[in-house]
Image (cartoon, rainbow, N blue to C red; front, side, top):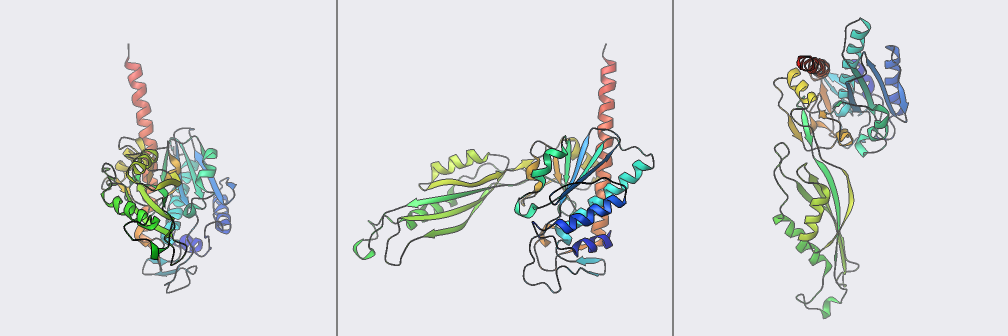
Length: 369
């Protein structure tokens, strides 16, 4: 697995340029006797012995561009003392390799005549880092889905809830005037109007506390106003980056913000909604059986889990989120091995639990007079 990870890391796959990596993985899957489907830089294949339940194994092929501060070529992986460093090693090619390994193990078991009890769908998709032409585009072709494991570096902590993102643009209005002729207490200054609204956000009620994610929170990330040094501005615009929770819809939160602020507010982006999988969902229960020491948690970061609304999903994988998008990003070999084992155990527990549930329902039905 570590050799495969090194090979994949050595293939540059910045968002929108994942084609060569998708080609390499397609060849690896074909060599194992699997039929691969493609759309753009997205690829998927299925194995199974029963049509349902269907469990999706998903991670992304793309990386962010390399930043400054690398001690070596980001696309020339370095392996030392069980630590592999390279762009994407942690986010998320380690998850890709671990999911692929688990998928191939279960495929080998099926070929050897050992039952699975359902269908596995492996989908390795593109443009996750830019929320582009990836999982959301091919998801209809993967359906029906009964559950999904999303491979992201979580330290194998199962993330059953994920924050959403609401980006709001504000526009405060004033009236142009000459600063020399206008006392500050009578000026209709758009920048001051925006400042009053932004300061008011400190006391805004951001809603209830989510048990796994905490409260919704926001940051002012951009502000722009004024046309000249000697003109009182009539317009000031700002941007709010709001990280939401499942406790409140984006529409409801925006309505409360509009009531609290004087600035005009408009939505720049609201499609990345928060998601949550209930604790009693069969997949969460399978994760708890497979990883009894791993308690479900909430994830502050975004992932393709956002596209799985309506499909019970858990985000989980080898590596640590704090290493993502950093110089000398790395993954430990023991983390990679543990990741593949975890994915395999979860899949077996999920399909085994589905079989047990079906048997229990059958026994209940037969016991009725």
